[in-house]
Length: 378
Image 1 (tube, one colour):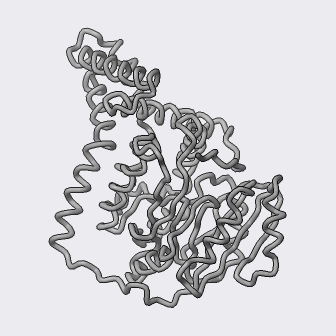
Image 2 (cartoon, rainbow, N blue to C red):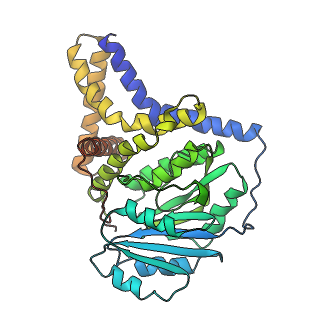
C-alpha cells in the first residue's frame, strides 16, 4: 500500500471519530426519533430499592456536603454505602461521626485502590438498583427519580446521568469536552447505546453488576459497558443532574486524563466482547466513539513521520502543510492560553492526545496504579 494511501486513511480515521461519526449519529438520532414510537417512561412512580455507592480517599473537604446532599434527595427507598480507601486526612474521623445513622453503611478499608473499595461496597449492597457516584459530585434533589424513570424500559440495564461542571470559564477544556460528550450521549441514548457513563452519576440494575478485575482503573466505564456486553441497553437521563467543580486548570486535569487513558486501554481487555462485529450496533458505536479515539495519538505520530518518507507526493505535501498550520495554532494557544477557539481547539486537542499517549505507555509498562488521588478543584 502506498504511503499516500495510508496517510489518507489515518487522516480520515481521525476526522471520522471526532467529526464524521458525531454528525452521522446526531442526524440518525433525529431521523430515528421521528420514525419510531417514543417510549413513555413511568415518571417517578417506581418502587425500586436503591443503593448509592461512593468510594472516598482523603475527601475531608467534601464528605459532609456529600452526606448532606444524600439526605436532601427526593427518594425514600434509599441507602448509601461509603468506603474509605485508607484515608490519611480527617475523612475517617468525619465518617465515624455518622456511625449511628441507619441510612448509611460506612466501611473503613485499608489502602488498596478504588476498584477494591467498589467491589467491597457492591458485595454489601442488595438493593434493586445501584447508583455510583464520586465524593465531590452533588445530586440535584430529583436526580434519583429521573434515573429510575428510564428503568421502566426493561431492555435498559444502565442509565447515565448528566454531569454539570461549575465552570466559571465556559470555554475551559473540561467544560468544552463535557458539552461535546453530552451531545454524543444525548444522540446515542435514542438508540439505547450510550458508550460509557461518567463516575459522577450513573445507575445499573443490581443483577448486572459483577465484581471488577483487581487491576481496573476506570470502574465507571467498565461497570456501565458490561451491561451493554450482556445485551442490555444504556440510556442517558439528561434531567438526572450531578454537579461538581471543574478542574483548577488544564494542567490540574492533565494527570487525571493520563490515568483515565491508561484505564481505557486496560478496559479494552475486559470488554473484548464489544468488539464482536456480529453485534453490529454496539460494535459500531463502541469502535466509532471510543476505540478509534483511543488510538488517535498513535495515528497523529504516524501522520507526522510518514509524509517525510514520501515528501514528493502531493498528499504528503498537503499533510505536512496542514500539520504545520495546526500545530502552530496549538502552540499559540498553549503560549497565550487564549480561549479564542481558533487557537484553543488545536491546543486542547493536542493536549488531550498527549495525555492519552502517556496513559497508553503507563498501561503498557504497568506503571499506572489502581490507587488514586483526588483532582484539585476550583
